[in-house]
Length: 147
Image (cartoon, rainbow, N blue to C red):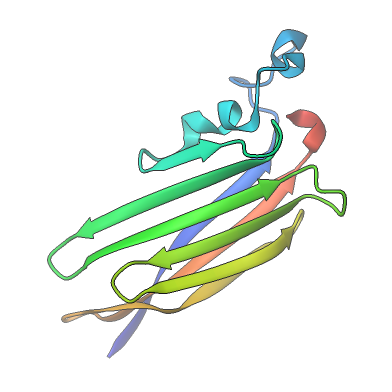
């Protein structure tokens, strides 16, 4: 049996970007601009973004349907980011899988942390290849002043 790992990478970084942050102060200081406006252009099509509490905190929800020869399943991910948390910027992640009823939460990832976390129970048997598991690689970093 061959053990293979599939990695889903989640990177949230408040970095200066030419297409988002410019010398024009109207973009940065506009009270209608929020975190979703900044990250939405980079989100995959199966993801949505919302601002539940304030303009810089955000929730990204993704739902991916797999209808492949050996994988028929739906996997979802919910990412909650609060860069203005009084204890320091933080991110929480929830992974859900429909077929085997997996609901796995990863909480309290702080700014500057980088982790690779295996998702218990989320693996698939692929003929000839063997077993394929899923890890989530997460990183939160950047500078809140660059938002």
